[in-house]
Image (cartoon, rainbow, N blue to C red; front, side):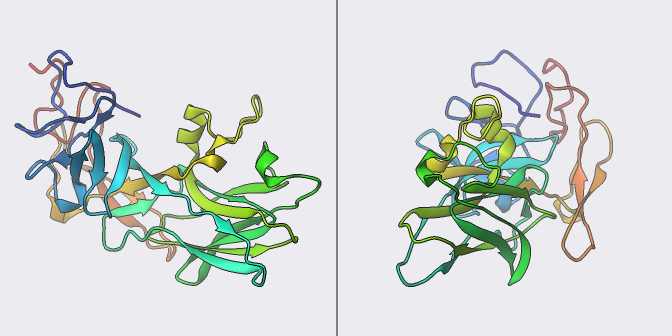
Length: 271
């Protein structure tokens, strides 16, 4: 559920703490528990810097924010897509991904997919443990001309659980000098923008992008002292590899035009 709000909107229910800005630039809403500036977020992990009309998560290596979804507890950020060009000697390589460290964020298994474009196979690793992977054939296809992602020069697969960090291992096949790429990406955002393979228009413009959107699950615990405007916080479980789910606190919605994480955010017209 994506919330759209501009600074010139008429009086509406509050999305941020008193005295805090709710937007960065023209298109990105920053609702609480995130916040722009000192004292506007629930903790330092949710602090957002607004620079040149673009929002960045200051505690996560200044990843640029694409959107924030309160209902799904999801923040979508842009991350670099690193190409892996062929080494004439080595047929395998490893690419480092993003490490979320001790943050309350996880790579979302519900919204992201793992994509490999190239000849051979690629696997996603978590602390030297294989998470998922897929392989391709390259049958009479030039990688630059690939227009689908169903196994011929390109493949995709879901990730099985929420991750804190990952790396990518690629095994190449063939003798050409093309560059492979393997990355995690939010497939819903790509479909929305027409960047990704669609059986009706056969487009994969994402392959030419240097940045790709990834969705992170944001979590809140008892130590965050979450309060909701209508009812007590409810709990959600985040599936982890070790089968012990993480419990996150969540404020339910009463309508599309509010922010239940703000004490007066449930009032329909700001009244």
